[in-house]
Length: 387
Image 1 (cartoon, helix red, strand yellow):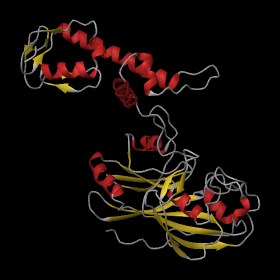
Image 2 (cartoon, rainbow, N blue to C red):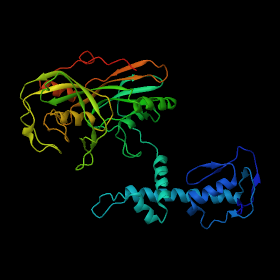
Image 3 (cartoon, rainbow, N blue to C red):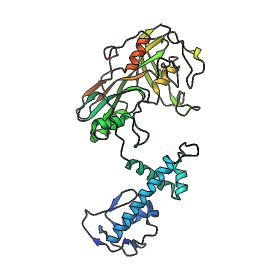
Image 4 (cartoon, helix red, strand yellow):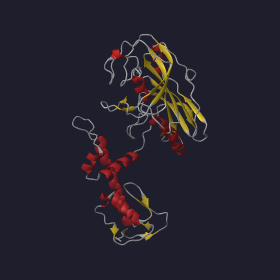
């Protein structure tokens, strides 16, 4: 057997005592396990510190004052490394004042540390930053001790890009609840409607399972170009990444299986689309009917990115003012898509819970622009029973 090592000047103590890694906070009651962990996790923090000896002991250990000081110093060095990493990753700018946005590999090279060490360091540095709190009002559509459902306004992201940045729905809900929320899903920034949060940590896993197993039922309202030939139709088409635009998706035979059930709720032949302009993936505006529109209720049976937007565009009826897949109009500043209804099973009681989100003002104005109305929930198709 190889040599055992231990921290110098240590004594046996109770099982309640433990060592804590200054880099990852992992704890251990046995010095040998802890020593091996340090040499594997953060050997750079031990460099130049004479805190190990060749003599070994089994069992939990009492740290001497010298070892405590050494570990405290290592913890300070870890904090300094994390700040350096955050600066390299997010704060440094080029001569033009633009963020450099270095990746982990570049940071690891500059810091002369292993890639895996820097990757974990960045993850923990970000998690250690307090989540920003916003106090903008939220529209609550349902709340109990376990769940909170709010109606997200358009132009607000579901979650912040970084924990120190505010402006997202998560930050607003944090301000409303007074504690960090647990978002269970998300909507595109320019899509409005229901977003569900868990308030109690012990129900998160059960709710995530419902979303993962596609047990959650959703309905969206979409104001689309043209009038579909059938009142009720299903789009069953695989969705894959778009090869020419990173943020976009496309219908592809080898894409992920995707299904959306659609119902036409209203239609209008009023010609108010003559001011159409092209979007990112549409060059020929004449390819679409801009002399009529329809209000669709879309129920995605799968949860692919941009699923409804891609599917209705694939059918020749893109959502009005969709800046990726449709045509843009001056009277609608965003894609007119609203997550109007959701049905879930309550994680505590097991009862079916149906949630409805009112239409935001910009959507109502758009409907008025094309001489349409929609009353929620009476104008929506009935949702099936929860399975």
